[in-house]
Length: 93
Image (cartoon, rainbow, N blue to C red; front, top):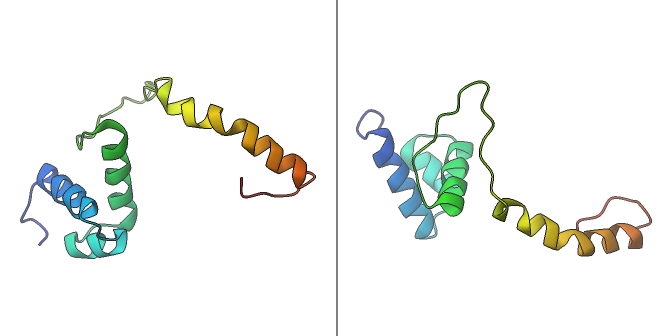
């Protein structure tokens, strides 16, 4: 399959396969890409609903909006309770 598809086509096929319930390993093997590549494409799709990779120059920081941090902020009380309960030992939150 290498060389048969263009990058955007592969990204689209990876997202479609993941939406159908295939595992990362199955998708990676089928499209001859790394498991991490599949994971990155899927995570990009979940957050932006886009498969297009945005290039960043060396000095530019990735853009983040407040919604990226909302889950972290909302989970802090639960995380702090877990740490207190564990008396500072490692927790799974």
